[in-house]
Image 1 (cartoon, rainbow, N blue to C red):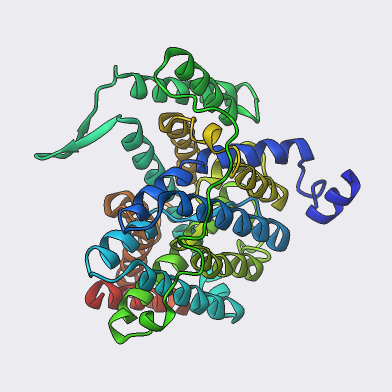
Image 2: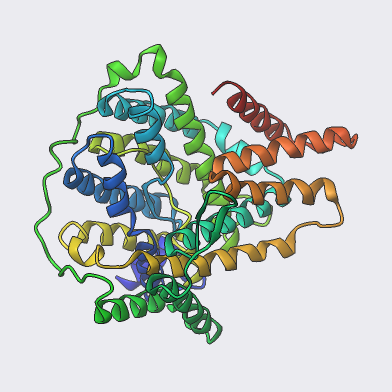
Length: 432
């Protein structure tokens, strides 16, 4: 079995081991596990059954992660995406008054379009044509985005009517534990512990359970039924002309969120080839796009690659075996739901804060002397947390890249793909 896994996943070639991949997969799973609760809560606001969506979420995550691991051999987990689920509920269902069944139909159609694009060389061409400095800006920006999410979830920063955000109560238990966990994970990592992230998350959880600040809900429970949302999508209603902008928006967000995640995780894990491109990119795109369509059939919003996979990469994950472990963990979560839901959100926030700090190290590789390269990279990085959207951050960064090169008289340096992406986002910001 060990030889078979080594041969299939190229463990030796990637300087990793089965044990390391298992730890990495569990680390990513713990960082992603919040989606099992948060996604049903958000889609519940759209009128969908919480328990059914919980099952759909776990199944979509398991299938997507399994295909990513087995087909593309990347240590990247998939699950219903944050942001996409909020758009589904608050913009499409509540904001526009469409039934959730119609919104699921739109998710399915966007997934099919995504799949068609992935079968063609268009998307791989788009992603591989992105200049190195913009890729580094995307990686850094995703790190900043994760830091913002982590600090918000931990209460380190809070909303403020005058200044938008302000410092939270650092002495509250969740905030103190998140900061302490972040320091502990960093200390573990500095001493060479590849399992630093998972050790930190488990340490925080154990302390929280012991102090009575987090509920230990048990270990095993029978999984609920998925029937209330399974195959309940309304594709015919989604084909109405009024849904065109919804489908296109879902498609654009999924395409560029995935692009940013793949580039960010692969860059951090040194998984790029000698030319700075993603090997097996077409297979990764098929896994991601197919998962969105399958997720809609199961009864959840768009499924996408998770940037939290960077936590597993930091723990040593380098192959698809990590993704297979993530898939198994999500399947087990169907019966281990109480245990998974017992991990406090501030424990995951500590892990994400550590990962964000690691990803920000990409800043040192940016070509700073060439301000036509470095400035768009920094704009890309800053706009991701400020717009609270990886996709919008990419769009604004690309538009700035084209405009700066044009005004500097260096438009010939702009790859055709970058110009195309900038134009697509310009149209999106104008009309959608």
